[in-house]
Length: 125
Image (cartoon, rainbow, N blue to C red):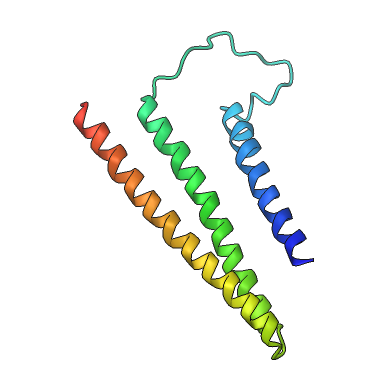
């Protein structure tokens, strides 16, 4: 049952990563909800592509961090509800360890990408 819940949470997070940015970036103004209004002066954006990539990476890291925190919370919940069963406690410890290792990896990846992107943006200006 817990594996199904974990797979469901991962699937939900994956779908959110795919569809939420598309839905939020598609609407620039609340008046442009598609009620017969078409903007005639459509133009390309004037944002720097490096900044857009940095924003995409930050959003992806945010979702990965949320997933890792949920895994840690599930491990803690599993440990609290183990009722002294050593098998469940060891399974909860493994889940907590995996969540903490995942958080460390995600934070390290975020730090490295932030450093690299800042260096690239400052080097080409």
